[in-house]
Image (cartoon, rainbow, N blue to C red; front, top):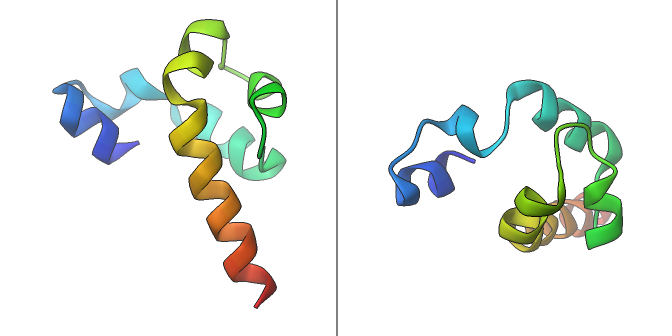
Length: 66
């Protein structure tokens, strides 16, 4: 979130709120459809951010398996 916010020159909470990040951590979405199930994520934010966030989540889950 911080990296994306910095690139867009906006505060981090504009990308996603802390509440949304907590729900994302609880649900660990790895697909676009799962990403849409996260509280605070609608179509617009999913289209903008699903790919980078789900890639990071997948990488985290893979590293956790090792």
